[in-house]
Image (cartoon, rainbow, N blue to C red):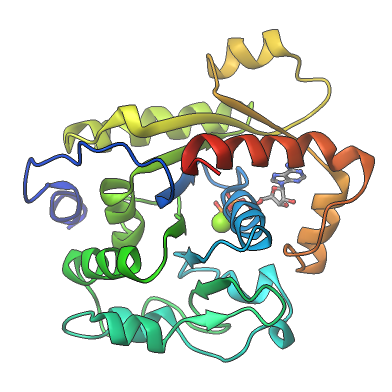
Length: 269
Ligand SMILES: Nc1ncnc2c1ncn2[C@@H]1O[C@H](COP(=O)(O)OP(=O)(O)OP(=O)(O)O)[C@@H](O)[C@H]1O
Ligand SMILES: [Mg+2]
């Protein structure tokens, strides 16, 4: 069953590659080991762009622990619509996607797609890579900036797997620990087998602690394109379910700067 699923997800329909360089905007998949900070990073890049008045869609793939109720208070969201209703359709049209997008009340340039509190994989009929591809294609038409917060279990999570294939760039997050290394050595072969374009990924050391110096990071993770430090203020925002809050404390400065650097590199702004 798993092998069948793996193949279904990972085989490309066409060998065509997008040649043009994306200088402004595009689709970014945020991926990496479990608990590495994917949701935090996806959300903070989305906030950075929305603050700069760029239209951005944030897609939250997690169907096991829907993250919509965890990133901001429900009162900040204009309506209650579910990503599940989009994927449940036989075909995903632009109108269907637009109808199910949730606008953030204060960050008006930001819209979010995700599963609602209490929902899970079985709330809606099963979807296939067809709906996942159509969703991403339509998002490209709807907004110049699309950020997809992928799950780690890509062998079983069709939307995340398709996002890794179809995105223009991928942030690959890892903590500086053995679990992250074990995760990558287990999961990277799935992508290699499917002729995934590994050049589009940026390796990121995430939630790095002060004691994890540069030499230690290089030793555990190899060379990384960006280093996101641990921030106490960010941890508190996460616990409070308020990731669209500003990071103003001194200890968050390095994290903020790195998010800006990533957005500039990936999106050109
Ligand atoms: N830079 C950081 N500073 C402080 N805490 C962090 C940082 N990055 C990640 N964390 C902590 O790591 C935990 C996991 O974060 P998050 O949910 O964003 O990870 P994830 O990769 O999306 O997890 P999952 O695999 O469950 O989807 C949280 O407790 C969060 O506070
Ligand atoms: Mg997550």
